Length: 348
Image (tube, rainbow, N blue to C red; front, side):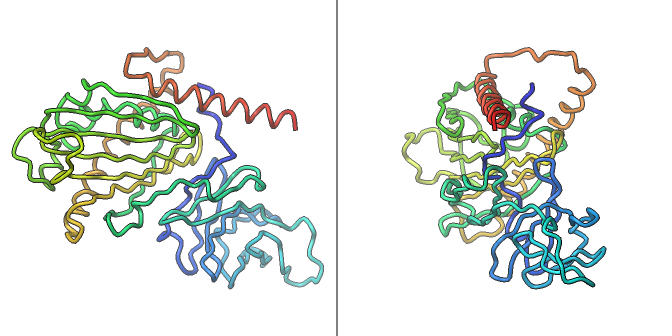
């Protein structure tokens, strides 16, 4: 689809975990097909700017931090955090065009976000509350994967959980009951919400490791996916003999995942699977993390292979099935936003 070639610009995207940008770190990262550097001022404020010096286009990622500035280590030009050149060795006059484009950046909880659209519309209050990344009632370990695939292939995956029964048969799945369960899809201003309940099934392998279920269980997945790839989910596992609203003894999870396009064929995948049980047991946190990380490697293997096949068979159309309803609606809305963005740019 045409949507795979474009990116929604007027939006907040996750560009780094907080621990990736510490002290004198200058992190080099490609986002929306642009080379960037991410660093911090001395007061901790995150800075996101394009990775080039306007003099000879040398990468600033090969430069060095000097207080609240970056010095290009090719010919020594020095740039403030707002991108303006503040020093040219050997001359007093600073060329007016010696500026590095920057993007509005903020940190919320454990994620550093950047706004890539009209700066006048950058409203940090619109960043969703990823509460479980930093909350005393939840525990998690931060994760990151680099997917060699277009971000929409990953949203396809997230919007159809029937794949858990097959891709994750020995990790997050456990039975075909997930694929066979019905689900509800509703639309909101920012994207889609999906609710899937799976009743009277066997626990997934990693649920057996961290829970104490003696028989069948009920599982639920209640999640939202924004138009720019922010996925947040409440999920749980409970004994099948308990009522839906009885969470005593249940395994409760909250997931935050951010899909940030690196290029049309690659995606940054930031993730955390938080748990609200066994809060003082670090081995449980590690077990949950490893189980999810292993499952995402299973996704990566499948989706990367799918991306290669799309290139190998460019004339082959995908045959839709009933489970594609959510992802079809999602792609249609993304395409509409990209069309509106293109029309706005053409008329400006």
